[in-house]
Length: 397
Image 1 (cartoon, rainbow, N blue to C red):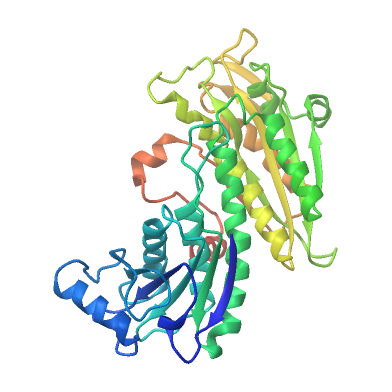
Image 2 (image 1 turned 45 degrees about the vertical axis):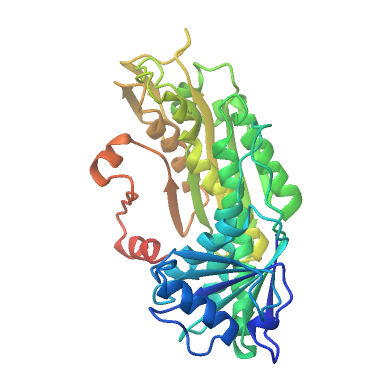
């Protein structure tokens, strides 16, 4: 997908040459500065009840008289703030993506000026609306023909919006990488697959990647991580990916991502219902890879290290048993009372490894426990930190 900015000419939005025009409407009334041809159609749609100016509502019109674009879509964005704008763009592109349009011009109409955050939101919305998983689905719907998006802005807004689009593209690419890894089934997205993805990132984006195998982890004393891996035929991988964007003496930020590519619960076997969703137990690892992809693309001035302990948790004859005692990399012994506590077992060795990097901060990302969902529901993520300043920064981000 190609994203760019465009300044409307003397003829306004009605004169823009594009396969489709998406007008994002801010406010609860027809914008006064909207071209007459577009305003008339929008007013009629609202008057006849075909469009409610509530966030995410859309109205589609074909061959509007006086408008050069053959397809016109109006999408309501509430007050025009970033959240409503993103919702409107996603809804509008959702209405357009199944048609014949290859290019779309997006404009924000109303008493709101577009800024960098709107540029980021546009790319994120487009990525959400147009993404289709197809790696193991030959019968997946055909990809949308939409190939380019132009954000129509005033000349004074162009530089800021262009910068936002650049950031948005990098973040969207990282999100898509994370989605692609997480959506693949466990027999495709193995620890070796995640290691290969990390190496591809290294080759394409200048990262330094080291993949430790079982013997390497044994030498480091990672008894806790290897205990989880010992019940699987898939070899474990301990991935360390480094991005250097700041001076060498700047302490790195470290991201640790849980990479259980399939979690049966081990000997403490999970219930069969919905166990297929345990392919997502490497969501933390996928997030770390995606973040590294975004940061490297933006050439951010930061030192960042991604650590991914990845393996399967399986109930093989060699698998750890409830009551077994193992020794972690820190030298502490751990009595395993439930083998479905595999996340903390692999992460403790990863966090011990992170200490040797003398990091400025460590962020541990994991699909760690169903109890968090019971406590907080499906619309919130849990966050715990002993450092209130860091917690506040993460929440703000």
